[in-house]
Length: 306
Image 1: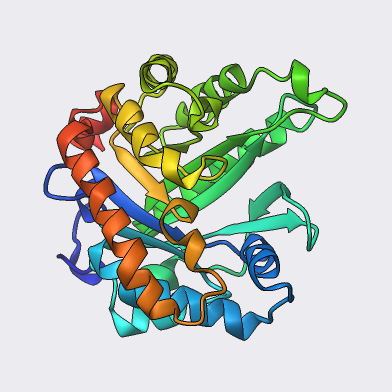
Image 2 (image 1 turned 120 degrees about the horizontal axis):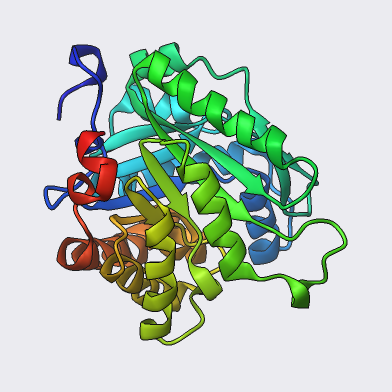
């Protein structure tokens, strides 16, 4: 694969894609949420060293089989880049997360500590920003944050991966929240900023018959003018392969997922062995689904020019 320092023109999504033109990428940029997973699995709150050790194990065991690998600066990006263990393109997370130690991510901003030019020099081919989307008074501010992220990536010679996660506005009861509609509206607004790749939630949390999921994903595809992939957060691990297949049949180009691949290895006494025995076969299965059903990124609407 071409190293970032030899690129003389704008990078393309081939740097993150499989030969089929689809994406089977692994996300390992979880921070406090990974600490929460350890607490649930082991009953103890682990320190930063344990988080980093797990992330490096995923990079070494699963990373060689991924078309792209996402990791954060605080817990392993430098080591992963230096070791060169990732088989596909390396993605650096640039989101600063507003999150209580035992709660979900409530908002994000661009982490000003991440030097995009330095990340590219180290080996990154892309950067990723998580954007919490709510229909509230902060909507415009979040949209400008996303636009600034896309601009900065372009200026640094990096691909931009923009992830929109729709959540209810304050005071909106869970039962009154139109999840699929909000996912579409977030995608319409954020993907309209023309990131290199858009990362979307699976509608209905993947908890529906595959044909129903395909219908919802087709509606999502209609509002996304760039190549897109799905994430696995909120989807049961055993439901994720069908969700990926439904999304790809509806126009998605693959997936960028973490929990659906490695979550049951968190807290294991033999992390490398668990990753080899369980996570690698899962990723290979998902990659086969992508190869068979995904729309190649260069055939995704305006993606052919990206």
